[in-house]
Amino acid sequence: MSLIDTIKKTPKAELHLHIEGSLTPELMWDLAAKHSVSLPYNSVEEIAAAYNFSDLQSFLDLYYAGAGVLIDEDDFYQLMWAYLSRCHEENIVHTEIMFDPQTHTERGIEFATFMAGFLRAMKDAEEQFGISSYLIMSFLRHLPESSAFATLEQAKPYFSDIHAVGLDSSELGHPPSKFERVFKQAKQHGFKIVAHAGEEGPASYIWEAINLLEVDRIDHGVRCQEDAELMTYLKEKQIPLTVCPLSNLKLCVIDDMKQHNILTLLEEGLLVTVNSDDPTYFGGFLNDNFIALSESLGINEEHVKALAKNSFIASFLPEDKKRQYI
Ligand code: ES4
Ligand code: ZN
Image 1 (tube, rainbow, N blue to C red):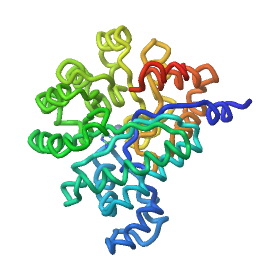
Image 2: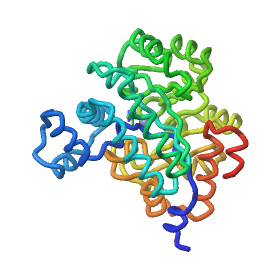
Image 3: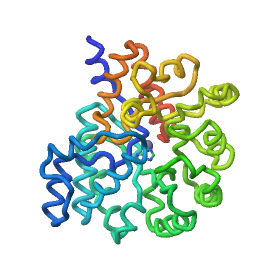
């Protein structure tokens, strides 16, 4: 079997995926027409051609604008259904999906609207494809703590549908410490905790996520290598890092995929996983990320198997379910 076949056929879990970042240019175009939302593009091709970013913020500006076409329950259903259908094609058997309530509530969209669409698609994917999926509610870190608290309150009717809370958006200048109190409350409600840290931000933000937010996983975390003590800690505690290679390339965290440190981190014994982050904006879904690593870093079949195994170990699945895959 070729390496590409191994990548495609190996059952995988995806742990770092923003559902709003899986909006295809085609669906954006169709929903803009449906709702008479004006886009600054004249065609689907123009949308795709606009996806050239210089850093995280330049991406986030387009990502929030793109999400403006998501208005009614069926839009959120279609968005989630399209992603889960792609999971089926890619042999992703379990996925833990981030969504940003504030991206929608700030535009006047009700929690009930997006949650109903997401949950209906997730149920259909479980029934039709056997894919299990969990939701991770992420707070936007560029907004104030009070907005995160209000979001947690609004989510109360859906607590049983949400597995974890996370932290995303503009990292620099918005350290995890800004959200210590709201994460403490989320933890008291029994949620698992994740946070983006060490993508553009320094290793100290990863320490804050660990010590102040008490995270179960770090999203990205690739700047951990700048702190030897942190590397030792991550290895000893086996705190998972959900790494997103094509994202790091597209957002200029690295200049060339050959510079990516994921293989070094794996070989050092850290619990790293491969993920797609915002696949339609960054030029590839999960298997494309594995393929990019094979082309640039020469990962082999053992690496693919180890990374896929890590994705289940690092997941929030119950132990008996994990054991089916590891
Ligand atoms: C994100 Cl790549 C990335 N980093 C931080 N926040 C995000 N939201 C969506 N994608
Ligand atoms: Zn992300």
